[in-house]
Amino acid sequence: MAEQDRMSVGSAGGAAVEAAGAEEYGKVKGRAQREIIWHRFRRHRLALAGGVVLILLYLSAIFTPWITPYGFNEQNFTAINSAPTLEHPMGTDRLGRDELTRVLYGGRVSLMVGLGVGVFCTAIGAGVGILAGYYGKRVDTGLMSFTDFILVLPLIPLLLVAGSIFQFTPITMTMVLVLFLWGAIARLTRGQVLAVRNQEYVQAAKAIGVSDFKIMLRHILPNVVGVLVVQATLYVALAILLESAASFLGFGIQPPTPSWGNLLTDARATMTTQWWLTVFPGAMIVITALCVNFLGDGLRDALDPKSVE
Figure 1 (cartoon, helix red, strand yellow):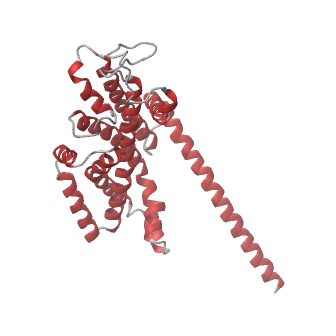
Figure 2 (tube, one colour; figure 1 turned 30 degrees about the horizontal axis):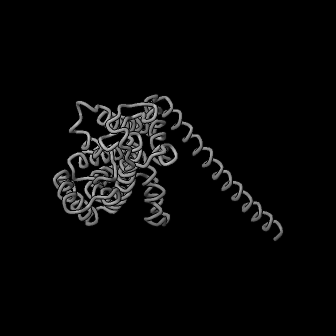
Figure 3 (cartoon, rainbow, N blue to C red; figure 1 turned 180 degrees about the vertical axis):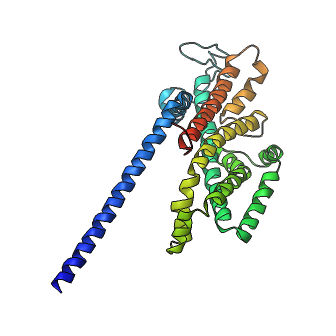
């Protein structure tokens, strides 16, 4: 009896040691994977520079009230249509408003819309795509039929119609863009899930009784997260461009709330004489879109398991 007790204690102790070793191995493996991803990303100099610039842009948008002493709608009639000076580094507009302040506040709107669209489109698209790809059959048919309906909707005309009906705020603009843009991510995610749902580790998890939710969360999602991260970055740039285009056409964010798009609209009449009113908001749109695309390229290479060191 004593011998059996010693054997059972030894077995329990061995199991505990083995479990602890497996947990430690998982931590080490996860840490090694993060180091490999960071090493791959760091080699992509444009992506690294793009990420730094984007961080600076978002920080400047967040801390705009502390960066500039002016309000975005504050008028100075003694400095109307002033070219860039030390007091007004980006000049002033026809009402004497500081252009730097308006560009920074416009960045708060445009960057918030871009980030919101990127996050929510990815979340909705990933959820729909994983459910459709994992369950298949009727679930797949129903979800993908609805996704196809979203994809065939004419985006720009519907965006302009929505802008003429509703008073667009940054939140409503984000919601409308998310409504029209999540479908492509759902399609892409579904394709990735179909490629991994029949792998041995997924079938083994099913065989030992792991719930579908845990399988999708722990086994399916980690295998598609790389694609989702890249798509999220690209959708940030797409949303900023769409918001700017809609605001430029007069159907997006309406004055006096500044955005990069409606700043360009205000500058159309004086484009040849007050160049700074066009150059600075236009440059911010171009720089942001380029940096987001560089970041997406770097993340795609870093998260690709087939990437060669």
